Image (cartoon, rainbow, N blue to C red; front, top):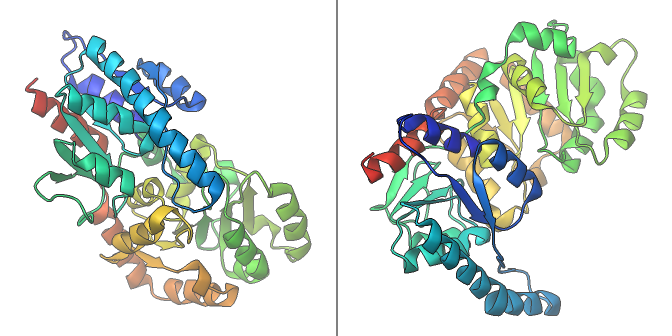
Length: 360
């Protein structure tokens, strides 16, 4: 989703004008490849982090990062920014962007910070002091200066809006005989969610058709157990995969009547963009509890049902599904609430704000 900001920036600029895009940050092989495909020049820097768990090893690593890595990263960033001389810095925050933002402040280069979560983390709270504007994803994002805040949403992959039901039927061999539930556990899957689904899989398949992203790590082990569990004749209603590729995901999202997912900001905004009711099960040990806050911020207007992992048993989850599907008017209200929450043009909005600030 964030790469679409670069794409929109290039489109927003008049074709006869030059536009230089640079990424300055820690090395990330996968991101660097994607950035280069978008015509973004990259510069690598050293960047430390503050570990908020306490043991001697973490304390030593924190000392090394604060006293050596971060100052060196600031020096590198200062050097790059001095010679590149950018008009503006757009930062997604996090400790990796800390040296760049500090160097930009030293050089009086305006910084626009984007906060993805409903509650700003420690690094973004610190960085917000140096930002000219703070672009937020969620309404009422906590602990940030209201004078600097602009609500824009979170950039999504534009491809997720291009799925079709007919293509989904072909790709997944859907029967269309039952309501379709999509279960997402993030790119690595989610073991507690998988375990819960496995415990009630026969019951689920009696009433629903399931699209299930299991995760690559435990896929083989999970399928051994699932194949034993699924009653004969119900196999055709179960469509498991280790990981939905982008070309599959867009069709799965459109085909689903309800989506079960974690509460990462990117996931929430893509679910909202396609207008699907959802059950959100936030990751309980996410950094500073941001997934829990994301989930409740999203559900506040009726877009979703939030189930906390520690309080959700397999049977409770099953009963919640039955209740939800037995109230079609509630499902329709959830769909509309999701669409009302969605900001599918977030990338364009961000690009426009940036260029308006530069008066181009």
